[in-house]
Amino acid sequence: MSETITDVQGIFSSIATKYDKLNAILTLNIDKLWRKKAVKLCNIKENDKVLDLCCGTGKMIELECRAVGESTMVVGLDFNKEMINVGYKKLNKSLRGYKFNLIQGDATELPFEDNSFHCITIAFGLRNVPNKIKAISEMYRVLKPGGKVVCLELSKPKMPVFRNVYNLYFNFVLPVIGYLGTQDKAAYNYLRDSVNDFMTKKQLRHEFENVGFENSGFKSLTCGIASIHYGIKPL
Image 1 (cartoon, one colour):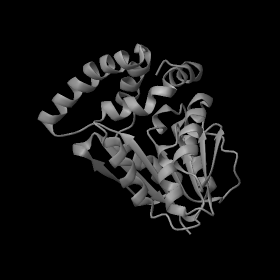
Image 2 (cartoon, helix red, strand yellow; image 1 turned 45 degrees about the vertical axis):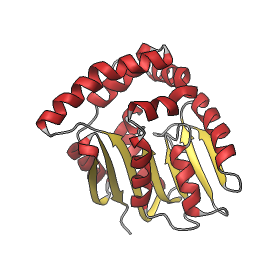
Image 3 (cartoon, one colour; image 1 turned 90 degrees about the vertical axis):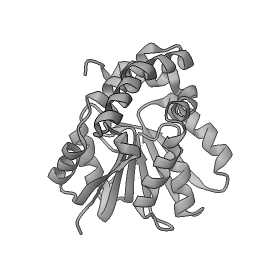
């Protein structure tokens, strides 16, 4: 992709306050269900230490805080300060009594010690990381032995007729709706291009295995337009 990190920063800064609303509109609010399925697959237990990478406005963190309970802090990391600021405002209203910490950082240089977390999640963020393999390696490093990584991402459907209809919507209609909602054409052109250029489900599973994750795999969602990838760090 031709976009630099600075370009991507600017894109997310420009849509930070509208990000959640537009995602709900563009996915017919199905993204909420996808996140719930991803967190359920994490099998988070009370008091588990959980990290959410590319946390954005904190949608995954809200679910994860309720899973670990009020006495344990959930950590979120994102490279964009504006998205984090929006996240704090939203979570401070919805998660009173729960503990969370959103920090600005790089998914390829995580500021955590080895074997720190029981579970790591990343939702709709891995495709925005320039060095995806390094990010997966960092997840492996900071995950405890026996811990689980869960990655929720948009993907491409395979059913022929549905795939054609979806491609028409995704490549031509979605950028127009995104522009009408944000007045930022680049933001949703970037979304389209980042998904089209991303690894296939099988390729991502292969990269998980190359890093060292065991029992890796994926679950397709909503006819394949999204998928949950997962792996376990061996004991």
